[in-house]
Image (cartoon, rainbow, N blue to C red):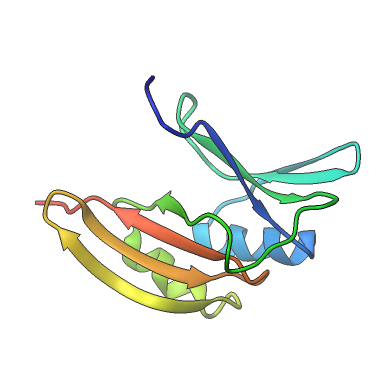
Length: 124
């Protein structure tokens, strides 16, 4: 097993608002698609890396009590953090060094009410 996770979805109540938020925060243009009753916006990733999407789907509700997902922002932590609140999110745990080996983390609330985390390796 290469990774414990190979796919994740962050639920959205308002798909356009959530897509705009993550496009702004990650400085990306996510591709979107509709699959049946679901709408997906694919988060940027390396071709072989773990993938994920913003998802509006029947029966999936955003909120603070779901799984905590860590987005990799190594090399751009501060610039991503700086875009969270102007984009409509709220930082609830600022950039924190866990250990030199683990690196930095932070937690924010997105426009849909989800708690999402950031992670970056500590650069020497």
